[in-house]
Every structure is written in structure tokens, then in C-alpha cells.
Image 1 (cartoon, rainbow, N blue to C red):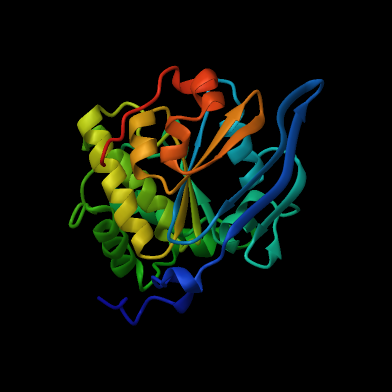
Image 2 (tube, rainbow, N blue to C red; image 1 turned 135 degrees about the horizontal axis):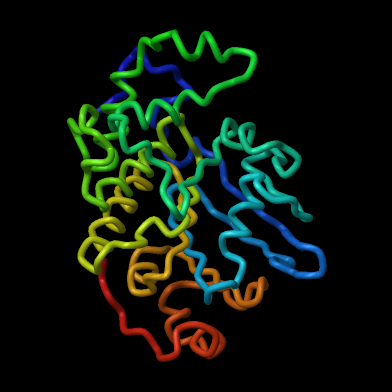
Length: 269
């Protein structure tokens, strides 16, 4: 189905070949004398799911914070042909890099639609009064479009706080893609979900990336990660110790020693 005509071209669903690749090269983060990330390089292409796993404290969330501009780093971060490591978070978001948060970021008392639009129309200091009181003509179409993408059609009028946890997680993803994005950074999006819910969530993310955007997925549900991701990166003590396919990760001695403990059997999402 084609996007409604009212939606500006920048917000339309575009196939993977029209989107930008995220490339991070030699990213490092230090907090005083503590090395949180050291020489981390990854690539996330449109239409693919890349997994980043590792023990607690390995530096996974710090790396996402570096990618999105919430912590200072060294190295180079590019989205397509544009170097974005010198940009503030809101400009990286505008360039096409979006994220979700570990703790969730929904306003429980607002409707699902209001939560989505709050992310789709971030406030700009110079335009705050206009943004507060202007109703954008394509809002309803945009909300319905992203709710269809995440599998929650018709949920726009529901209060976010009344949704089940799995549904709230999907609204978080809807917020991430509402303003248009090339790459989604999903930080522990399946936290709190049971195994069946995690499988359903992973299937939905796979359906979303088929529409074009790429995803960097961080989660402690190893079975889900190894079943849904196209490529796996493993962090230990802030450094990459592995890059390869899920099948290779399952039996890699370094990955087993650092994180898995035992070889993982193949599981289908």
C-alpha cells in the first residue's frame, strides 16, 4: 500500500536501497580513567537486523549513547555519506538515526497517538509555541501508518498506560520510526517479555525491517537475538571480540567463554 499523499516525501516508507547505512569506525568512550568502549566498529545496513550482545557492563548501552550523541566519543560515525559524530542528538535523529530506551519512554496518561506524535514532532525552542498549538494535517495518517507497521492497527485512541507490556514496547518502536528513520537503535526492547512474547516481538521487528529501515538490536534474550539477527557483534569489557553470523556465534570459543557459557542450539523465530 502506498503512503497517503498528505505525508511529506521525507516521511514516506522507502525501500532499503533508498535508505542510508550506519557505519561506526574506531568508536571509543572513556569516563575518566575507565574505558567503556575501545575501538568499536560496526556496520548496520538498511533492511537488516544487527545484534550487539555481551555481558552486563560490556559497554553496549554506552555504545548506543555514543552513536546517538548522548555521550562524547572518539572515532567516526557516518549515516550514509554524512558524518554525524559532531552533531547533537536531535540533529542525528533528524538525519535518520532513531532509538528506543531501556526503561521505556511512554507517557502513560496520554493516548498512543499522542505518544507517537510527541516523537514525530520534537519541540524546537524557536518554534515551541507554533509546535504546541498547530495541528499538523498529516498526523492521523502518520499515526495509522506506523501503528500498522508495528502490528497495532486502530490503537491510537487507547491510553498508553492501559496497554500490555508487549504492546507498550511496540508503541516505543512506533515512536522511533514515526518521524522517518534509516536506522533504528533498539536498546533491550524485549526486556520484561516472556519467551513467547519475545518471539512475537522479534517477528514484528523482522517485518518492519523488510519495509526498509535497518536495526541495531541489543537484548539479553540470547535465543531471540541469535534467531532474528542477520549479523552478531559481541562486546566484552568495551571491546569487540566477535563479528559474524548467528550460527558462527553459537559455536565460537571466545563468545562461549565470554557470554554464552554453552553452545546454543539453533532456534527459529
